Image (tube, rainbow, N blue to C red; front, side, top):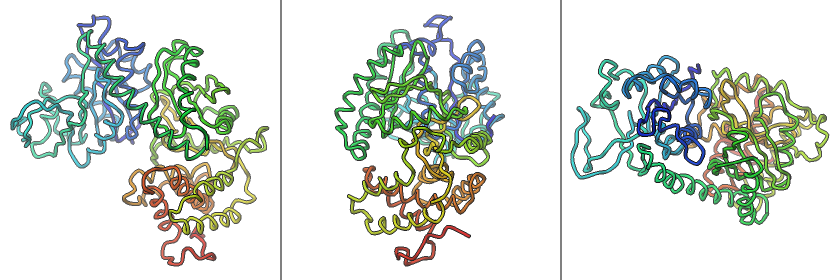
Length: 538
């Protein structure tokens, strides 16, 4: 087991659902060709903060769930409290868990955003409850005073400081609600933000649940994602973005017929492409990715073609007419956050580093941009914007000088170039990569994007501990000087990226500037002088 897993979601799936028949518990009945629990697992695995998902299932479904979802599955007890106790004990025995969310396999309206919010709330609070407002009152839960003007009903999911929960959980009297076991003086957060807490209970609930799922999850995700894609692609590619987005709606229908797709929905964690998560009667769960630019589609396709050493997702097919790539869904598909002690992450990068493809081996290498060609492209795009124009121009010139000093004659490889946590997914017992950007560059440039994505998690302060851990971790593959030199160039690249592609009032671009100054110009006042170079190290 991965003891380093800190944030865990416990999915309760032990109920029999007698109203649905003994041979079909309600969490396994179908809605649009997929089981109800499938939708719950979709939301869990798409959480940006979850490290592990654990299912608690009835005895006859333990092997089924473990095989279907690729996550640890523990047998439940004879009652709901017994099952919760089994799950809590399993988490305690196998992980160094800090934050635990308990959700239900028959509550498919909970979203990944809701789970992420609850993870973030634990730390400031000791537990979080999903609630419904009912009527004015002042209520008390077994010693926990609820100073509110509203009486409320408690629903799932709920979240806990795990060590506090486990220490106080009454394993001898499990019939109490879980949060009753929390100390009376602990800090609680009652969340009223999610009105759709419906549990599937009766067969006739399915029709309403389907409508609510479309209205509360599918359509909002789709509309928000397409707006984001529209802004991003319009800033980058100079195409008729609205027409392309409109055309994709017809493309997906045609590809759905080709790949026997019975249900599909837009993945809401994309910016530059339109990605559908789909279920095929022929291939199972699949991903269909549409790219707006044929050049980007082509080089991604080339990477899937040449890099076949077991670290990439399985490509099932592609359609060059639609710039579409179809891959097998990775299960459980949990995003891999950087952790220095994660042996699977070390194994993954060891495999990446030992199998880098020299650019000379690629017959179509003229179609693959170099990292500095990408750098110059973003210099051009950002050049239209006035934000920190003088600083950016000064840093760009220094980046060219650093390139000449450290990388001009370095061996060039065909790099994935986007190996950050959103593109590294847990695949049962190993890590699998998706979404290669595809660029030719020195070895060091395969490792720098992880720094940016991890360190921007909280831009309110710079996490020097994590930075140094990452520096030590990746320097096993390339010298620290080369790594820091590549990181300097890449940070300028990302500052330009955020300048012209983010609609956030330059928050991230300004964060990049602060990081550049902290890491490379500490103690230097005249950092914009032409003859002042960044501090790379001895």
